[in-house]
Length: 241
Ligand code: AP5
Ligand code: MG
Image (spheres, rainbow, N blue to C red):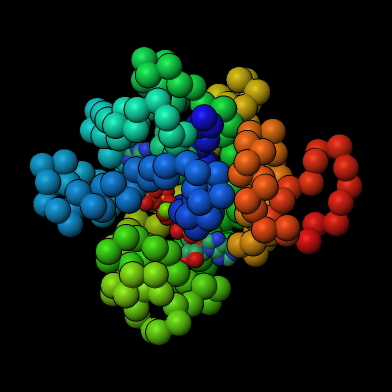
């Protein structure tokens, strides 16, 4: 069982890569942002408390966020590994995660950082649309749906997130590059950090992430991958595709 974190700025491709990786690696994808948006739609008490922070592009307080994510991890029991996207975002959250995982006899195996320059992030966010039903991700330039405004996977309506417009974008990026970036040092010290160039096309990033997780991928999963998806052994120099 593997437990992996995707770290990356807003628009770096955490959600896009998680959608592919969760299938390849058999992990449960938990995105704190997706959980908050679901809570808004369902008008839960958590949703009502968190909405203002998210719309303004601010971090939701740790007291709400940590409990929400740990509860979802605990529901998985001990069988399935987890792919965390957007959590933790602060050192306090990272420490709370380590303690929470210890209680359920888990630990983080790897933290993968998707590195993307700030200007590219702004371009991606301004073109992003997500679907109403399951938050599948699209982009008007790089990842269009087959029918305009409709999700290919579940047929629901596509919409632009409120925090992808206006001042919220700047605020979110500033928070990432001043605060969340400190997580790199936290996981580097634990020798769990992997850096991947996120400024490539989606499949090349996916390939690099899989390659970097080579030691974590169980053999039965490697056997089920398409030939082009199988990462080269770290000691060989195979062609990329
Ligand atoms: P969240 O929903 O997690 O938003 P985020 O961190 O701002 O990350 P994004 O979802 O914007 O980016 P992504 O990396 O997933 O990129 P994506 O794959 O979509 O959080 C929202 C809010 O919730 C936060 O602001 C905060 O308020 C709150 N929150 C969440 N977690 C919290 C926490 N731990 N603590 C406190 N508060 C928390 O891709 C972006 C676009 O780029 C898409 O259009 C996609 O098609 C395109 N794209 C992706 N990859 C590529 C590529 N390689 N090349 C070209 N285009 C690409
Ligand atoms: Mg996302």
